Length: 226
Image (cartoon, rainbow, N blue to C red; front, side, top):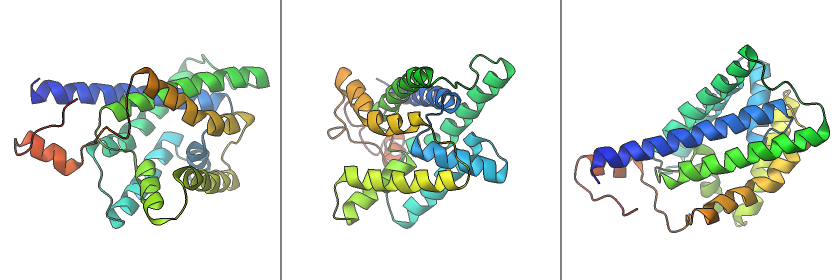
């Protein structure tokens, strides 16, 4: 496969992945089941009168700067994560305002149904993004750094970070619903389901850093198989 076709396919997977995740995020916003990081984004959007997508981009850039200070490597996938996910989220929410397909859901049973749909879209989108092997997102990279330097399991680190993020978002006006707790409980298992379904081994998959991609494009390095 030529490099052009290889990276075109990767870009398509990443773009479709972020579109699916953004659609899931828009559904979550309408059904009171925002994830912890999106509760923070929602709070920031209310505090500074910006969109939730713009808040997502700003938070991503701040964490990217922190990752750089901590000397963590990152790939083009992280940059696309920061730019595309927030942009697509704003587009879907704008479309829903122009064409009011999905109003705010007040019924708790319906909230659970749409929260599950949101989780499925998010899990599938994350699989597509991860399977492109172009690097982790800024939040995941920060989590990897913590697990390297804090004597705690990754699950505990993730729970602690998301608890702080969720509480901070709630303090500044972020929307927390019953579905938000469902997001925390089921987000991981649903992602694992898609990884297992498509036989994608996260531990065995080596992601490209920006330097790796540059060297491959300059023909100084051979791309990894897969």
